Image (tube, rainbow, N blue to C red; front, side, top):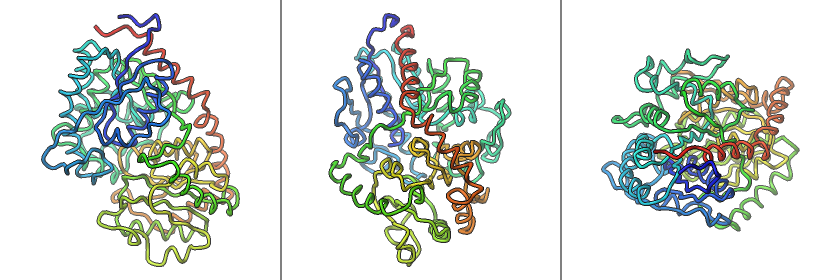
Length: 469
């Protein structure tokens, strides 16, 4: 079947079992359904049950594949948010066992395209055998992908130890400061599967797919997109930044509960000056030692600036809950200018409030997109998961924020450096250019028309691509 007549397609989506992967896949599904294409969104039961499903197109069908039980993986665990980082390899092994039921579904459906993550490195070859085209969708940016290089480098290149990932690679053909710090790379090493490394998975996903896409745009990083085309020798089509159009309820909770929480937070923010508040959120999967959490808190306290700090129910510090996460007496001392909020918070609404000026972030790409969509200046504190360190360097280099200085070896830092850098970014005269640059990024990150143009181009690629044979 040739799709050049713009015939409507059936597209299967298969994201990795992490919320930060599942949601971008869902956003792309919505857009494809708007264009009249049928979408089968495939994941495990718990992950599908958590998704916000109100106002979804009837063209989107959810397909549940039960996750096989394996030794080492806690019972009923189906996502990275339920696991410490050293247990993630077990989730990858269980995910790999979804190959037979997924292949069975694809074989007995009329799917034209499968859009997949890199963890399921086996899927592009399965798709090809079944006469289905495949897209590797990288949920981060082109610069991070370019850092890892072509499949040949990923499989057996010169970089075999964490230390070798701390320099800009030789194939990057434009000025760049993007590389890991040693403590970040060591942390990433800990969550890799011994049998099939993440580098092997990424190499297979890139080599055997028909098309590579990522959550970015030419306007933000044209050099990196062009480099990827050279490195991969196949089409690379950014699908835009997927700037959020509404606040998803993160765990499928009731809308009135979100509104109730927002009312409390909005009332607090309404009493603060414009662009004066730092919003602090380190994501759902970042873990720090008690010592570093307390050091961060002391730095925020020393800055003297107003803030809202969202601490998720999942402990940021292993084995610690509640008040132990922050220093004794901290909330009392900052009572007039700071608010510590425990549990889920409507991040998009907070970032959009006029009183919020900056964002102290773990550098997860989704959070960065939300913040720059409102032009918020960034205080960069890499969570050391995935490519968050690379994202921190990229944004520091683009001067839309500054990175908190940390020890290369162990990731430690001082409260004084947190306070000094936070003030420089938020209020000092020398940070004015940073604030201006971040504000200007609204024209890329918050531009719906521009981002929909990218999605349109990506969709046209799918519609006009010859069928796999």
